[in-house]
Image (tube, rainbow, N blue to C red; front, side):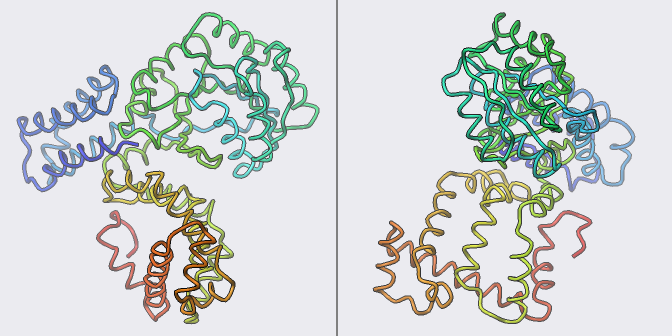
Length: 454
């Protein structure tokens, strides 16, 4: 998300960084470019107007014009206003209430509501350590209830059964009763979507809301619909007392206008963003971190949290000890690294959070072809014998043919994997030497944001 906006803003603001003096003319020129960048990102026009006016007012004030580094001061103003537009701070689900906390999910059909129910359940179970029950009141979409049953089983949430002969309000009441009986901490209720907003849909979801009085009413919206997402959210907000928004499919939208429009148009905070089909692909939305990413300054805090949550620390310690002792980095280790990377959403998800990485690189890494390539390499390693994984040097021509045949790949793919392994092995050897990691970090210093301890 935001690749196009990041590229455009980065180019515009980079021209100001080195300037010793800013005038009203060059500030207006820069803001004209910023305005075009926001409109191209499909940010709603009223939001763009307000944003530009607030930045202009501050940019022409003493804090920028009178600054010793006015270019940097203007970038700070843009950053601060981006944060303000998106909501100032992370506003998560309030879990300090009497259980069961009920969460009602609303939205149009195709926004990814059912998948988001499973993602949110998984997050509450794994991160917050809550006992979660999920239920579906979607009696219209074929197999909607079965889809949620399958996902609930995957994320280890309790599933309240329902069927399309029941009324949605009846399902909601029974699900709440089930959650109470089972001493659940949280109930998440999925509701039916429509292809467009209609009165029948609104009446039904109002009745469900009245029946269970949910603690949270979250609007799930497809970020790829751009500023229409914000307008749809406003329509739902007029019918229901929404408490927040979840943006989905953010990995497929290079513009990101919805994230910059929803908060200001609805007055409701974006609580989470979804970025893929997998049930672990849901992130807490932090406006200050997102603003940093938009301006090409990365999001190191989210990356660190991602590593802490999803990396197998025991395996990482074993590998570190192995490298330190000078033992070889074998193909089993390489396979583990691929698996860990996949858990973290792939290389594209990580690169997107690194400072100085342009949108083109991130977008290329998030290409589905990259995930397929990683799966191919795992399949190649899986087709090897334990000896071949420990000692890749024994893999000769006939073994390569066998491995390629067993993994459904070509010999060139096997050669490419072995070459990649040799390169990583060399890097690991360097890290194992005295001062290896420190030297490597010093080499990366130019790519790190200010304040990193290297």
